[in-house]
Length: 440
Ligand SMILES: *[C@@H]1O[C@H](CO)[C@@H](O)[C@H](O)[C@H]1NC(C)=O
Ligand SMILES: *[C@@H]1O[C@H](CO)[C@@H](O)[C@H](O)[C@H]1NC(C)=O
Ligand SMILES: *[C@@H]1O[C@H](CO)[C@@H](O)[C@H](O)[C@H]1NC(C)=O
Ligand SMILES: *[C@@H]1O[C@H](CO)[C@@H](O)[C@H](O)[C@H]1NC(C)=O
Ligand SMILES: *[C@@H]1O[C@H](CO)[C@@H](O)[C@H](O)[C@H]1NC(C)=O
Image (cartoon, rainbow, N blue to C red; front, side):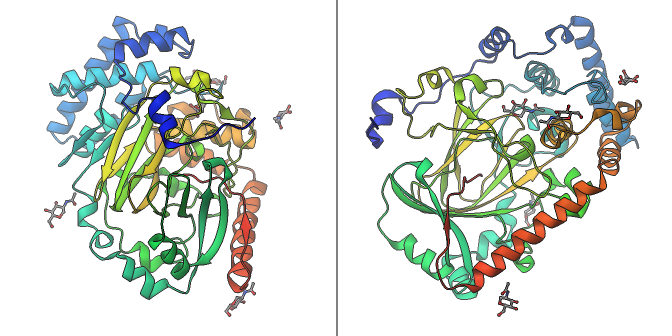
């Protein structure tokens, strides 16, 4: 028998409070789960090395020493990663230890169970304290963008009213969502209509901005994501960046991990989002669906949970109660960065326009490469023995140069066929409809 799902379901069975995650507790918890591949890494001796390296690094910056190379080294020489030999797993314990050491070095002790809102955050501090380690909201980047000032409802109505857009409509539960193609104008009229907890619309369009480069000019600089190893991918297989997300109140993403487990970057242009963010290593509580693919030109596994964390069916998903997560509200003009390995779900608390981007850099590139190996079942034997002695961007270049030609060819075919089918559908007046999982 199918259960009824109502909003009060959430309030009665699963109080909407932040589940506190005390790092020390979390660490114990992780240990129990055998999540950690190599706890023995964190010996006092290695910690000392990390500290010394960190201090050296800070000194180097202080004296503006030339070598960016050295900065990379200090991150990685202590991590015996050898992609050539075997699979890489994100070691969350190690990463948290690194963060604790860095916090000590900075003499900074932020709340341990919250997502901070920061401004004037230096790139180095971002790398040291947050990137790949802990989510953060940055408040002084998006307000500088032209998009923030000019992307009004009227703007899209006037300039793109007749354009076809992809949207998700939900009547009932999140899993019952159906994708449609509609005029922007029609979509905007939906925004004006009555919405309800289980009746909402969400434009989740991966191609809208990509196909309109003039719109990308409205998105200004973001120094935190300038180091972007996706730029080192051959163009045929480079994942699309910048998804356009415009939803009514109550609209939401699934609970998921982004493709290749990349770092998720979300910018709210207007509106307000609520997020639930799950630290790594809790797959066994999240009912991850197997066999999903990301559908990008370079295919990858996609980790989606069956659970709607904003409307939890505790009878169907009892283990979910054990999952720990952070909650945060992201307001207009705020940028949220969610590290690799964190499952997340977004909920629009009012009508919200946002864009989401992705990050692959020095702090998560191994995760992304590993997910590519998995997604394409690549042989590690192709990687040279010296692979892990290269600097991170050189590893990425080397990796890319070794991809079989047929993968590039296939990537191009996927892109062409998607663009072509979109073109055909755009030209059709009849509505098109299809079940599509969303992501954000
Ligand atoms: C935003 O713009 C202000 C004023 O133009 C400038 O001072 C500030 O550095 C900019 N911030 C960022 C993060 O680019
Ligand atoms: C990516 O995330 C999934 C889901 O949590 C996890 O099983 C997998 O190990 C992660 N990949 C890497 C390379 O850490
Ligand atoms: C992956 O490749 C190996 C050999 O390279 C092969 O034995 C295995 O069956 C492949 N797995 C899948 C799922 O294709
Ligand atoms: C990485 O693994 C390869 C293949 O097993 C090996 O030849 C190489 O020496 C290893 N590199 C390091 C630094 O351990
Ligand atoms: C769609 O319409 C445009 C403009 O009318 C035309 O150039 C294009 O070839 C059409 N595409 C398809 C696949 O019919």
